[in-house]
Image 1: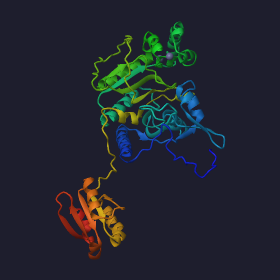
Image 2: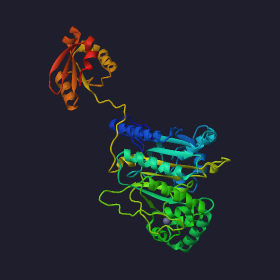
Image 3: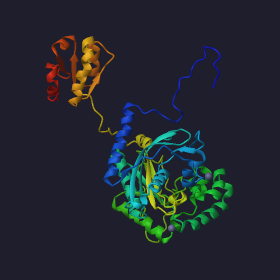
Length: 454
Ligand SMILES: [Zn+2]
Ligand SMILES: [Zn+2]
């Protein structure tokens, strides 16, 4: 704290925290409109809402998400309460929902449990385009099902939500990273391969070899990209069960006409994923998506060429069959989910704004003139609200001209004028702003009269 030594010390006006933003007016409606539509789509497919607290115990993410991930190492907003508890501002939605599933004994419910959620999440990243420190997400989770149809349901619902938001040129990037049967062997091969190229790797990757080899495939460093190109791919190492599961997911996608690209380098940043992982990106207009659909046939190895993920993922997710056990659950809870980045959706070329249903476009501009009229104006506004007529008003402006000008500027179809004369006569003037015709209406008849306004 700077010391106050003189009276001339300039007080700094508080601003928002770096990477965090106020959401105001129409922008707020854009969020609520998107959430309303996304929730409605989710409800159609049988998802139920859940809201978890913004603060969670740090342990949840250390054990659940994994300590060797960037998210846990660098990006969590951790805090110590006055009582000494270590808490974090939730950086993602999946671990809290698994926590809730176990805590509320949802294993006893009819399975699978299908949930959707929305709200703010927090990551201490470098703010840049499409990356803010507080961001909004909409997510879906299917808990308690190991079936491939659950994966397909998550992907399908996500695609429909994105299409409802106007997005058209979507690409689904998908991969399978195997399970505890087949992944260890794949990891050994991966590590062996990378050890041969140790000198060509960035410092992070040298560390990843020991701590989290799968994330070697995630490295964006140009040096490492070359090595990555010839790295063994996970699909070629899948066990029979994983291969069948993946094949079924792809078959569901084909029957739903959802095109996909198999991306061998797609592993996703978090530790808890198993089998299916996926991301959805928007193809930038002008660059045609000519990638042929790649189909994985029985016994066939997916092509080795890399499909680049253009731009930022607007949605991403996958299966996380071991998260529950990582978190200390006695029983495994097979599950699959997705998170959609709302700000990123808003940044796409295809996005079309959706208004929430509560939005009222003002039908009447209410104009009051003079002290007496002002005193009674709130009673007249109440008549209008009871008659379900949304209004705009200028509480600060006093001249008729400036108030009419405001009404015109806002393209509001009617003005109701209430001045001293009308106050004495118990009337109002209703002016049609388009035809400029006016009616004098008794206040007692106003509720009935507004029903005749178009
Ligand atoms: Zn690297
Ligand atoms: Zn497997």
